[in-house]
Length: 105
Image (cartoon, rainbow, N blue to C red):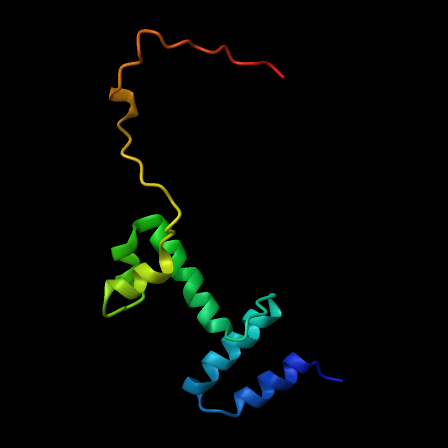
């Protein structure tokens, strides 16, 4: 008895090649544990998140072919993340600062 996945692939194979590709990809994603209602959209969001994390917001916007960066900004940036300047090493410690020794476990 063929599995549900095999039946769906057979049904998709009767469609023209271009329209079968998204259906087959969605079936493959579902078989790998992507339980979202729209697995291709979930894949696209994961792709956008990775590009944004590795290369920044503008690269993600271009890779996702968004017409406006505001849409990318709304979904791919963490508004809770704090921006740091990385200039802490330039600050001189106060004269009355007390150093704490590292505690051993």
